Image (cartoon, rainbow, N blue to C red; front, side, top):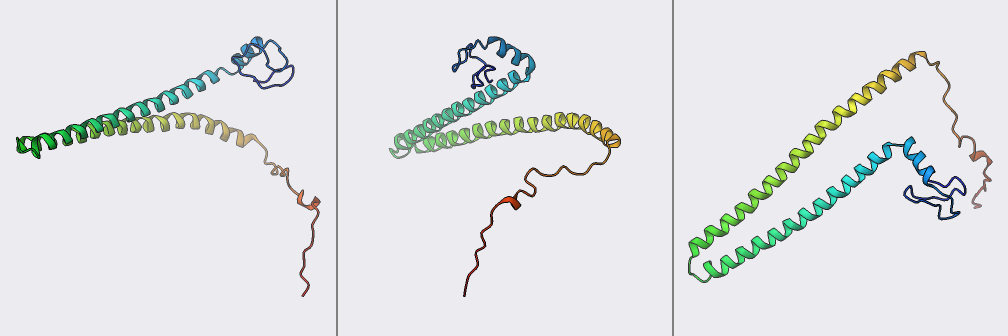
Amino acid sequence: MFCPNCAAKNSTEQRFCRACGMNLEQTAATLEEQFPARKGVELDRAGRRLERFGQIAFGGFGIVVAIAILGIIYAIVTKMILAGTQPIAGVILVLFLIFAALTLAYVVFAEDLKEKRKEMMKAPAARTVAADSNLERDTNNLLSDPINKPVPSVIEDTTDLLPVEKKTRKL
């Protein structure tokens, strides 16, 4: 928000203007009354940040689990298979760990894909309802509005005012 006294940019959480010292509490309250949707935008932004944090946390956890599985496989290969104590049991354990990790990855990716599909199914339905109501209102207005000429552009014919230097070559 901008200070009504000096037009300095301030946060809505600030109580006083940093430039002139004016009390901004009433101004912030008035803005919140006029723009209540801003809280929803802030909640959406916080939700996106939390989702990114969760992706980083689960990604890090996945890396740690992958390293642990590789460590266990390495220990099984060196202690059981290469040492020759129980090579068949070692191979079976290694295969079990590999396929368990692949199954876990499949479940995680399938659930993620399922959530994305649900979001895609919800989004067009919400968009079409709003679009249909706007479309109906707009087409009704089109019938009653007279046809006007297009509005001229702000930059139209301004290039005629620029000085032009003619560059010609003499042979």
